Image (cartoon, rainbow, N blue to C red; front, side, top):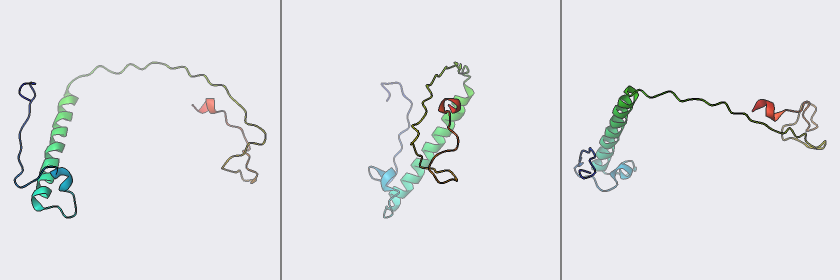
Length: 104
C-alpha cells in the first residue's frame, strides 16, 4: 500500500479469526468474532459516510441529456390471440388494442 501511495490503517481485532465478518454473524459465533464484525462494520459505514460527504463537496459538471428518437412498428395481434388477463366479458380478448409504441 505504501509503495502504491495509498492511505490505509491497520486494525487488529483481538481474538478474531480470519473471515470474522462472516463468522461474526453466525448464530454460534464466538464473542471475539461478533465484536470484530460489529466494530469492523461500523468502521466501514463511517468510512463510506465520510467519503460520501467529501465527494458531495466536489463540484461536478451536470450530466448532459441527449434526446433519443425511438421508432417502433405497430403490429396488430392475430384475431384469435388471447391474453392472460381476460376482460369482464370473460372471452380472453381485450376490448381495446394497446399501441405499445405510444407508452414507450
